[in-house]
Length: 143
Image 1 (cartoon, rainbow, N blue to C red):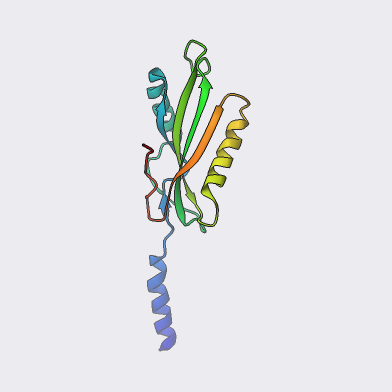
Image 2 (cartoon, one colour):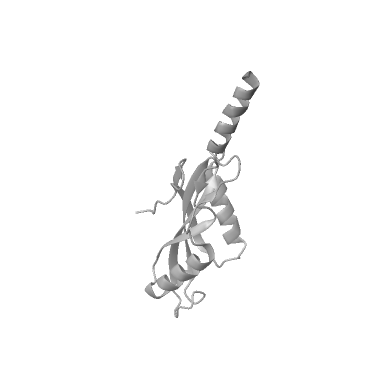
């Protein structure tokens, strides 16, 4: 009888244990200093990395996080005439772990990726703007 009770309790508890759901590996465009580039970036970023739904985080990932990344690119590289630099900022969203410093992990990885493009991305800045631990909670945009 005790064995049967234990099995019933375990079966009743297991479906209730679910992975945290976060916006993950996606980017929300935030702003740019060039109006003509704004719509293009919104469309391009949304089509490739848009945040259109939450995913179940992997085991050990117990937080959702958002980091703000800002950088400059040459206007000519962005298809804009002139020698001006274009400022861009975007919010990257991900599953994370409370055991890891999100600012270091997310930002270090982003900086490393951007640096691998040579001098294309300039003045890269990054900071964590949000960590949270409830489903679909990493939706904040910076002010």
